[in-house]
Image 1: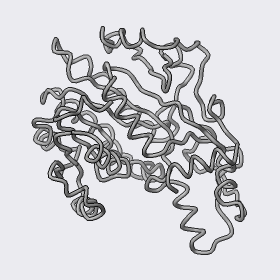
Image 2 (image 1 turned 45 degrees about the vertical axis):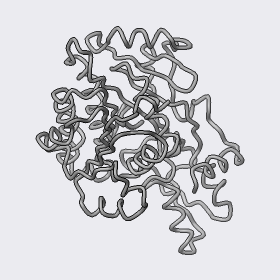
Image 3 (image 1 turned 120 degrees about the vertical axis):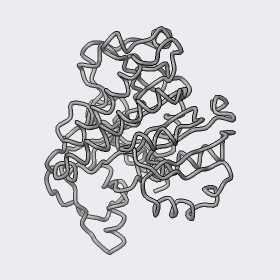
Length: 339
């Protein structure tokens, strides 16, 4: 699956984040990648990453200070790079509402800078990491991620006769164990002796994916991307209440109410996108709605799908074929995530 990376250079924007670190480690340990470039703006986090594991002092890794807001610095970083995984983003929903301009500068303008720099550098492929919050967004963070997705998909219109770079999106739900996620928060409270855990709503559901599965899925997208599509993994969803009771059966749940900007259920594929959605064994692909973003390569890839989804299809966390309320399955998911 990873032979296409042999001897190639790959750059990860936001590479010191939870995903970036696991992804970089996987590349260095399990592939023959020629070079991994960690592109991020925080020297302290880069230093912490280097100290956290001997693998991050591997001769094939580079730590490149820079900000996606700085197009000139991106151009320098993309020299002799073949693939880009765009993970850099500001993500905290409440922070976005108070600092909207900062989120626009990083999430929207950063994506614009990257597409421009990648087109000029002539890289082979770019995969941007999206979020279920980009689907029918109700908060500013989700709106900026939707804009970011649109910018990356639209960049396929400018590749010219060479047909490269290919720009695609990977969109998934909550990542188990990522920085700032729910289970680490609950673990911290339990470690302090708390017998009560906060929960927003007893009916709330979310999609879940482990960091390792996210890494494998991004690699699949990099390998199979035709350009212009959004990759959606087939991943489980659970009630937040069921998650809490499976992992912390001794604790009492305190309902604190849905926070501003939150949905009761998240969506990965809306009914509006259903008519452009194709199913595969392990994932779905959403084709671009505008013909100018489609390529013959993408049409060929879509012809290999299991089926085109019906117009009324919707992949929501409460209407997911892989929804589970089984404590055993939830515990297995948590165990696989190493939590």
